[in-house]
Image (cartoon, rainbow, N blue to C red; front, top):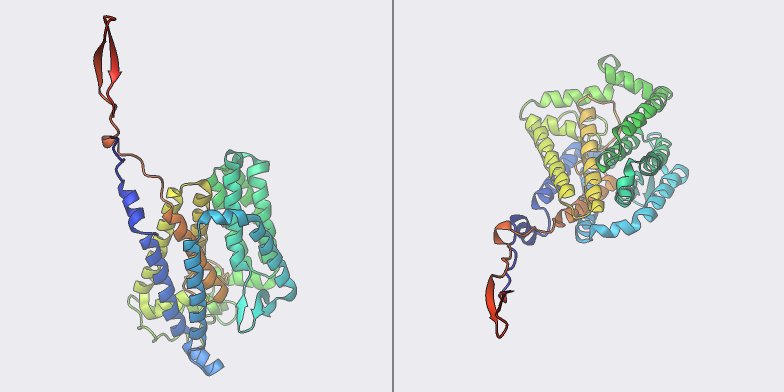
Length: 407
């Protein structure tokens, strides 16, 4: 009888866990930490403005439930199904980004949201996923042609550039920069020539310079980034308050709920600058915890990409992981004064409807890719042995033939 190939440790693990438990735990921990810190950072502000300290907490819980449903759906849906929706999702994302410029609600001088009753939708968030899905589909389909400039590089750059142009009209320079960088990273891992990447970066540099210097408020923000303290009471106010918040927390912080900068000193304390409040109340220990959790998220995401059975799943997992990692690093850099203010949330942690729900859904898709481990290889020590041969005399012929034994 033939022997069954032994199950490898990887195969046994796949059978035991329907998803990557480490990736799931890191994502859930960031969400829970975000709920706690968002409430701590927004309670006083909400009590004064809305006469309800739990105003933002209640909405954050609604968004978390929606995000949890999205995570469940993304984790249960075979990731290969998104391949069929690559082009429809891309077209819809472009249409929504264009429509928000015409009929979107304006807030702080930016047209980025659709108002849906008490809730809102920021089309830039699902557009991130749509672009990553399309890039994954296209790169997997073109395979070796990725190294050809006119086939594997230029079309992807044009599509990402069109999406970035619509984002810049909102204006949303931060998200446009994130999508551009993620696109280049996906092209790099797909095998495009490094010279093409260098040319693209050099070509985009003058445009970025024009975008920054051609807009007075962006130029002032850049000057405040270079030296915020002379601009302490105007354009540098937010970053200086953020640095004060992080610096005053020390090693262990003032304690949960005892931060002071959220008392109308630090704007956007529960959204873009949630990490500053976390540093003030939980100190260096709290910030280190966040960095470690994001490190685990990126590690397991890259692991899922590496272990994916097919190129589409590998590119999809890498693209989502790159989105998480690049945006988290950018937000941390802004809070710590290492990057100019961008207006980007901290994924899975900051308060925000579209951002939280979309990132939780993408975490679910990443979990689904992690389920698709490679086909286990047979153990070389337990290969099926060849049947033993034996000699047999053919009657009446005087000849001896060699025949194989039956299994």
